[in-house]
Image 1 (cartoon, helix red, strand yellow):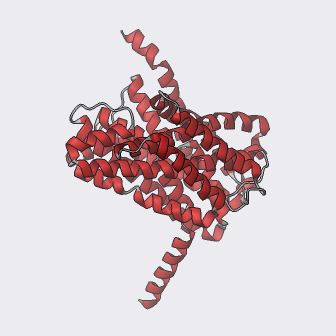
Image 2: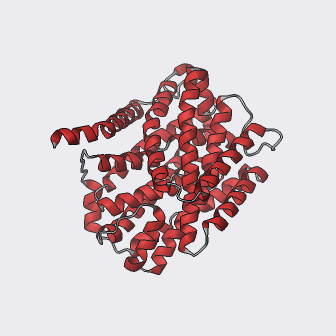
Image 3: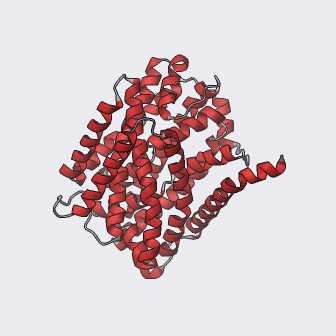
Length: 417
């Protein structure tokens, strides 16, 4: 008994020392764009879209596990592998779309900072520049260990959305029905939200960040089982938070016919239905998520662009050791802040369409990953099993199909009329 207990605590301590990449990557997925998408889904459709979180969870686990395994086995980032196996031209085209989407995503994060602080009466012209400077200092002046500890704290804070959902007093019977009864409608708005949910839950940039952070942490194949559980915990946290955001908005906003455009609207609109505390907790979660993602998104983009084109990259490197990495990181933050501080910037359009771009680009990234992770010359004996390949290829096919449906749905509607 003592030996088992000792073995358990030893395993637990090893797990705690090795966790980070999976939990951080999963948690940062619930960013301002994600919270907006989930809030709009709950406000517009109530509990009806909860079912999408089940396939999203399965896809997220399979894809993130592939990333972690590729990073540990090859010791190379996803961007490096894509360039090496598909050439510079294809890499450039993929990354052009990803960089555009990530700049839009970063602007969305600072919009989340501005929106959440407006709930507490703080102007965006004060909170956004301060947030940007703090984010820059954390990455440029810190190191991976310090940054990881801050990110883990942020991950824990995102569980505040559970409180907002409980205070909203949802109909748990309808929650169960929405979760277990898939409903599909082929109109543009419904397809846009589904694509947005998948695009924000399994975002393309996550795959690059996950693999880079596994390498940055120096994980080896003998530690793979701990990394696997790190991925499971991170993916579970992602979907649990998304689940409760949808519930909070469905139980209050949808029930009372309130239409919202962004996550800030959800925080404000919760007040008369669930109370001031629920509104403030929702706003606090939005602020934490936005700061968190405003750090990780530019970081991930700088990582994979520098990897792809052979520049030095990494938080542990000094400014003069990786000038291109830090210059790109700083530029993305600066552009995001500039967009948000523009008067009348189309924040809603930026938020929704960056999630859709994510969903459209995701099949390209997943197909590239599947080709490489099944190549024995790259992975040796650690290639995918049949289940992983089935989920991966099905995901790519479904996303491509949904993207095509989104484009042709207006034409179908006209023909039906």
